[in-house]
Image (cartoon, rainbow over all chains, first blue to last red):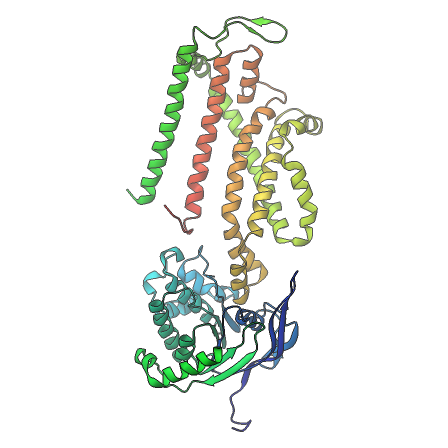
Length: 255
Length: 273
């Protein structure tokens, strides 16, 4: 592949290191190098506590690297931006707002007219299959539905990059699989550059174009796997030989 | 009836049962004590005759009849309630505004914090002489005394409310491109609201505590505080019991109203049971 026809580099981490200061300073990341290309679905896979969330918070602009640098579209990241949609690991749906108000929040921040806000939110809420819950408050939603509203809320401002931090980590296996299908479907309809953090190898395989495996703390890139499985991916794929073979390799890499 | 309505009705029934039990126990105690309690008591400088230490319901009824028919009770309630409300509104407006400001601006917080602690446990009675000198007799000093107490409590509530807003929501809002102003208005305020309201509810109760003290400033009929002070001078125990019961009933009524408003305003919260 020559440099002229390779896709544009969107996110880049160069010799990235992060140390949490405190009584016992914790080195979360060290010498981490990572490239994310345009419209690529990249999964970052690693054990709990390997600095995945730290990595994402740095890309989101909430943490500044203590070593090395991160860039977005070749300029350095300084502070959060709606251009990089960020879904936090924790439940961050606003419980005092209806589903519609949640989805429209980013548009409100951009001073979009109410009519235009409504058009965008209606479309997204329909897309995640929650039209019946438009006026509902989050307390009426299940955990999976809430998370999809958070994804829709991030998509509303149409960011070209999505940073997803274990969005389905707290869900049971069945719901998780359904949400993965939903997300895959959304992604195929609205191509984005996605950086998806997870500790679940199967989830990474099912969703990603490429998987980066991180080492235990301090996190650095340990291995990379291109995932050449056909799309759209189906339920049956999870039980195919190709899927299992890759899964075995990844498990070996995770150690 | 809706589940919320049913729960509310259950609460009312329970409250009535609790109040009724106390009322019945009081009646029994008063009847038992009628011929056994001393009627002649030493008040430091002289003996007072014919005192009912635990006035039975008949005495209370007679006294109530007098206070109601003379219009003293109604006008006392009106005057005291007016002072409580004005002092509460003034104090909570100032307190909530300052609490939001200090909660939001970490740079000035250190200026406010020692003062809040300083005034927090300063009883109204301690400020009383100062307020009389500063603001004279009359409504001003009474209302300001209540307002000061309310302001300190609500300031603390608003400050804590702003400070305890979970970071996830602030981060999520910032990641969606929200300005500081939007984050404050649409995220911090709704999150702080329950705590602000809880502090206002406490402050409202406190305002009723303060009123008795406030009304000792230039005590004139009619007001509940004065009624109690006057009853103390005689002493007339039935008047005291009725005065205390009236203040208690008013506090209960206001608190129930506040709780009702609170429940409505925070309907979005996850509730259990």
